[in-house]
Length: 443
Image (cartoon, rainbow, N blue to C red):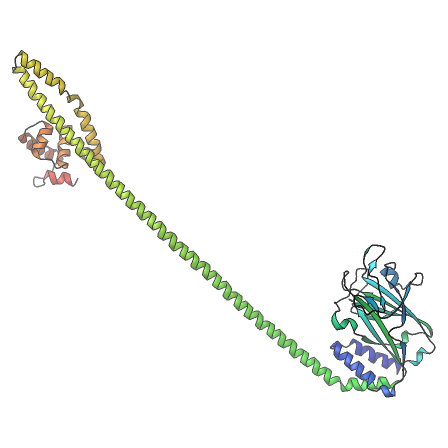
């Protein structure tokens, strides 16, 4: 019967259910039939324990439970610091290394005459933050301590705070760990972090002598099975609901993120488009202004060139007139007397200009070619038979000069001008019906 009882207790302790529910079940099983159960309080809160809080004992020595060779202090529970109601205040500074302590060690020896009378043990433990419990050098409880090998670097699994710092966590322990006579309980208390602001330890041990607790335990386990199943089903439903809720939140977040990304991208594209439009408008205005300025400059240059042509032409006309006048003076000089010849020579010397005539013609030709896109080169290239005098005649026609003006410029009479035009048309092989003036204006 004892083995079945132990097995049932262990199975309940190892059942993967809500710890609070398990605690309620254990308390219900334990105390609902208290009136028919005999029990002994083996260790109660407020008793004296030996402890170490100066860092003189290493974790390895403590795990090997070799504490007899050390001088341990005595103090009543609850022990700890940081909560101002401790019966014994612990030191939390390693006096050897001048650092914070992560571990504290507690030990108590009890004497039992008939431990076989106990059918089960209830161990109630206050541990802030985690603890290992040994009975006679055997680990019986691991409370809020990670699985695996424990070392000097081990810390509690979770932080204990608030009302949990005063809570008695309850565990059923098999009485088979107890010996007749002297029994040693050793507790190693672990902090969650090295700079923890508080610490607390207390312990109670209760022994039950009646098998009735096992029967009640089995009965309550059967009666509470549906409650546990319902709890598990509710937990499963809640878990699925939470999963679906998380999925919905994730989808909403993803949708919101996509909308935000789309809005940002759209905004960036709109800004880029606006900047591009502004750039194009500014560029168009600049180009338009440049074109207008270029056209104005071209028109100004064209006007200046035409002005230069007119000035050159006027100068050429004047020089041509002076040249004709020189010819007349030369004729008069032949028939004049000595005194007249002297006066005529003076006039001739004053109006000496003929040597500059060709120079003025070349200047006129250059300006004329600039305005009319290489008129001379094109005309000479297409009609190479034309003489320089005929090319000048074509230039005067292009400038829309009258026949009388052309005759004066070429120093010939009007009939000779007409004859020259006839020769030009013939060299250019123009039909009779084509007017030379219209042809040259469009050439």
